[in-house]
Image (cartoon, rainbow, N blue to C red):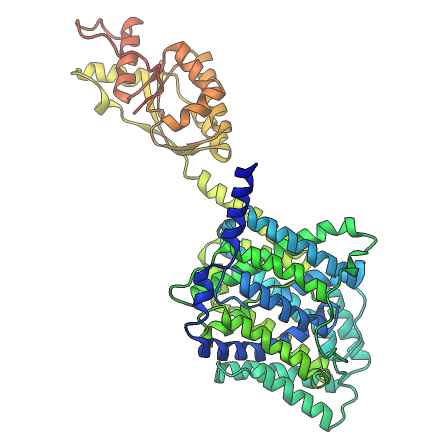
Length: 579
């Protein structure tokens, strides 16, 4: 019992912040604090916008940015990661709000947080490296399209139409706008988005999002634009923590959406941490610690009315570009946003919804890396197919389902490519003949013995093609299979090999093998291949030994003239070693 507790404590301790992580925060505090201020300015309109888009309101976005941002920064596995509400997460939350209400979203967030902590304890973060780049690019492109379409109603200044699919909602919003145009809202949204996009090209280091939002708010207030609806009242401070939302009647049915939220949080957070590593020199995140930090953040945020959070790629990139060197910057970002909640809630509440829609429209456009997409689609047809399919599934279906589809298709295409590497090639065995032989004997041997070399993997994706090729061997007396170049073999490959040997035996053809590797013996023995070969005495360590045994067999059958007196033919392999 004590050993189990000791291992459990060791696992938990490995996920907690180390002394080195905390000491790092004191090395460049001035630079980190300035970076945190810059990120907070960028994050404010995004937090408000994503809160509104999620269906829980702007205050939920702010609370998430403060609570989840601070906890993920302190306990996460990246020194530069900035966490909070994101567009990808709001895409998942909208149908949950529609079905279960705000309380259901909070419960889903807490359950997802527990799942993330469990994944961290299970050391599941390492598997993120297996997600192919085309899946990531397609996922990002699909999210960008969904975020853009989500903002259409607020950008057009129309009431949110009914519907579960963003394409349907956007189309109905366009139809409502055509019936009763709101040019003020559209002008504010387009103006904010245009200023952000143009400003990013002109001065990338300037946070034009907050500049654009301030200008839009001032214009709406000065000219009293009643058609530019504000986001509404915000509480002056964080609400008291509560678990009242757990009294949801359908709590048991929330496990499936919680798994989807947890999967998305893990995927997006680890992707964001990878981006941060790639933008710096000497920084490397710990994927399991990152899952642990995101889990704690998502457990705590719902208690204060916040939505599920993830690592935010855009804010993390701003953090890195602003010179951040430790997690102090992300903590400062959360502290600044908390100060805004307490000190400037009345001013923030006057921001037009159309302005926030413009911020998110520009954010969606900037998420699309045209150069990266072009390079990915030109790489191979398989990469292009996976990217397009993942993006389309993200737009039309569920985000997590889209990633699973992308992974499945990428896996199938990868297996096909690997299977094509398997080769069954006839080889010239004359260089391996032991002793001296006349040209006449060489000719006779070649008429009755054929040697094949199996190259590459012999597994389920390639095994049946191998069986077809081997079964079509012409009428000979002996087939020698050189197996030393088989890279991997599974049970299907071993069964197909056994089937091929039995079919050749029924045709009166003797099958001999050489060079079976030690690692392949277990799977061959499990399906009875080794037993079959040993019963016939046809397994040999090297190809020359197999050829010598085949030659002796032909002499015995009278195909070749009686050999001169010489050493007996090598004995077949019976042990566990081969070469």
